Amino acid sequence: MLVRKIWMQKRGNQKETEFAFLCGLLHDLGKVVLFKSYPGKYGPIFAAKKAESEMNICGYEQESFGVDHAVVGEMLSKQWGFPKELAGVIRKHHDPSEAGNPMVAAVMLADHLAKELEIGYDGDHGLNSPVDITEILSKSSISESEWEQLKEFASQECVNIKRFFQIS
Ligand SMILES: [Fe+2]
Image (cartoon, rainbow, N blue to C red; front, side):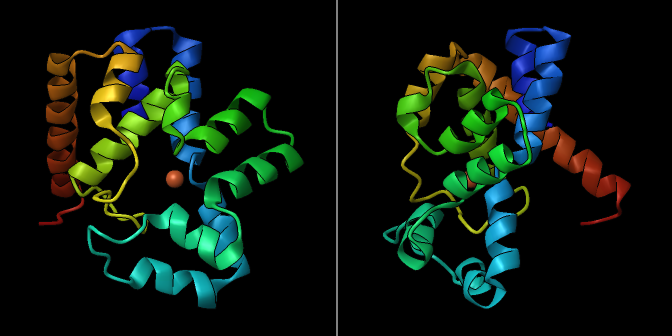
């Protein structure tokens, strides 16, 4: 939802906006593969409370499996015949040097926003993320005020969703 919102705000193209939604939905696909393949080894990575000084989830994955979820997600995407662009976004979504790709930047921003607002938990609280949000914003051509609007939108959506599901 957040990637779709970011894309729609900047581009407005319906087809690309739906593709952005798909990228947001599938960007962490590799985590599902790792969890299904190694539940006893991958589960504790999620359960461990991480300090700011610790490595991020990609670091844990590299250390434990020799590969991170971005690479695993790309591999599965190719095996399943996903479009190359989608496989590329999945592969690059933790690589700040790829933020010049607008779709990769949108996924990075949405991921960062979800962490900042504590929407769900993906095994990484984001404190140790290599992503420099100012750099990503500048590459994505999203201004600080637009970023603040997106945060407000996401925050309000959280309230609405919790209210709908009667979660407090
Ligand atoms: Fe990820």
